[in-house]
Image 1 (cartoon, rainbow, N blue to C red):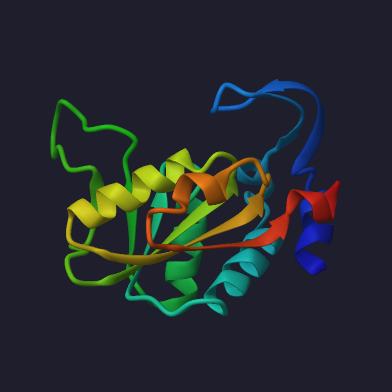
Image 2: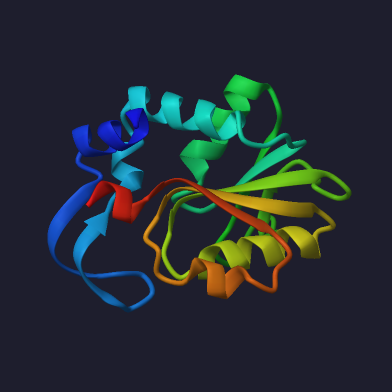
Length: 167
């Protein structure tokens, strides 16, 4: 209940006409990224996720999962990694920034589940690098298909809040 109230307090739900990253149209937008810039919410969310799952490394896909991964790493003293959306043509070309994830239990965190395509991408990148990925946790599930997208991925899908609980 506290997380739902904090999401509302920090205007994580906005109403209007929006196009989502999936291309879908929506009359509301879930802006967890901006809401998590408030330390009170970030701390509560990070601690709630930490209580749900043990891990060796926490990972976030750029950009939404990064603040969560950093906060969880700081609290738990476990390392975090960042998953890039695409390889860079300069410097290091790895899709993962941070420690080696090979043979480590990696928890993938997301700000919002919509279709689950970002989570599926993160799972693939981590597993391609030898990580053990069994769970993905998001702050908010928009309830728009994440279960269908990830049904064959072999991961547990969890969230702190479903959008139907907030609207």
